[in-house]
Image 1 (cartoon, rainbow, N blue to C red):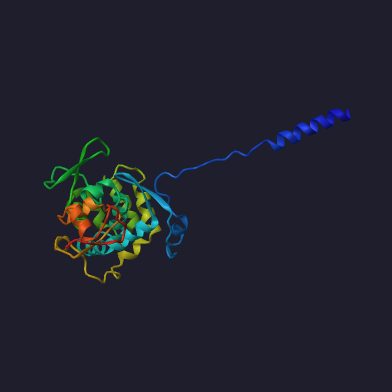
Image 2 (tube, rainbow, N blue to C red):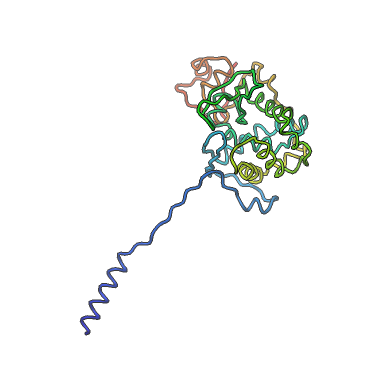
Length: 272
């Protein structure tokens, strides 16, 4: 009997030592909202290199710092359009971030289309073919980002289906986000949730009161002037910059003593 218990004990010890805990791995799909910011609008967002997945017209991965850089670059034109067209700046910036992947999405890079606006029957300008809800759909193409921001404002203000938005409180971004979905701006059922999540995570509502617009707004006319330098933005490539300033890639490389095609966000390139 004693031997029997000893054998049983040895078996139990052996099984215990060779048993491993199962590991459950999770992946995050889409944009995950920071609940601490949702619950406290006065909290301060901290910079980090955490990667977010933004998906609207396309799925792209960007870091928080890239999103913050995008906000820094375009918040003034968003505030200017708020004052001129009556669209909340938070909605303008939030949609641009979501639709363009903070300027890194292929539609934005190739066509300066920051809002995923399709051609529709009234569009007579340049266009680009892009796979979205269907293969080879027609999307609007712009000479520069600021034309895209202006066209987004005109698209909302002149479209009859968006008229109900303009009776809403200009600071009620939640109602605007839901109204955009109801009016048919996006087919994604989670579009309002994603848009509100971006606005609240990055505190874009602070641009709705109009007190932060102090510097001149860069318009499409100024972009088309002949600047001496250009600061590289998220999504820029040497090819897109060469198209923007009507230079060849080799000319840009020569002006900036570049040995290859590598560029970095924030880098100043001579383009005169």
